[in-house]
Length: 207
Picture 1 (cartoon, one colour):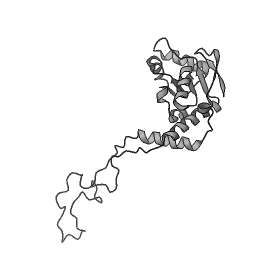
Picture 2 (cartoon, rainbow, N blue to C red):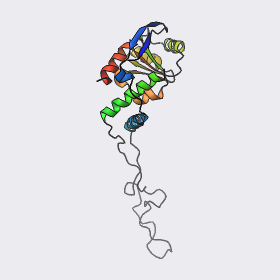
Picture 3 (cartoon, one colour):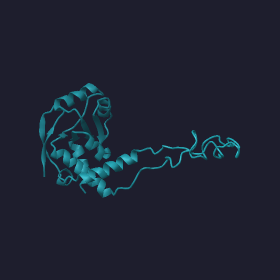
Picture 4 (tube, rainbow, N blue to C red):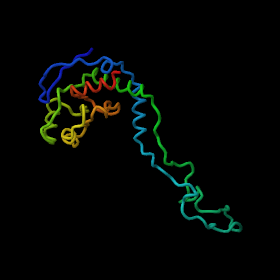
């Protein structure tokens, strides 16, 4: 069972915490990262791309020229696909790009991502993370103390003061435990959780 130091926002050690082996000591399997990130990004796609078929393009009701006697190939409409301004053959149409991924695989991938951050020694545990007011300066001060240039901060519950203080800082994301996901863990070099968030993550993924 791995043990890590617990810090306050002034970077003072205030104790230590034992981390659950199931959640923080999982064997890292990169193929699960690929499956989980592909699943997440596919669900994010709007799927609103569209093109018009020849039946949907306006105009073209009149035959462009007579059938015979012109020396040209016969044409019935200017909205056929081979005409400029005509319909599109096999073009994109609105659809959902989402696909299924078993819940067990999604949970396993998240455990692997968290475990990788611990193995890389880029996981930090805070005793708590509270700000007296909505001040970007205060949040940036904490980042400077820990030398974080990129951070995913996970809180036990939503905290508007912290979230609003961090939203204008590039490379920083603040999420509640229920929003913790593989994509955000992997795209940030540093992962930080509060002590209460650790307990909530273990409750969510440790079963």
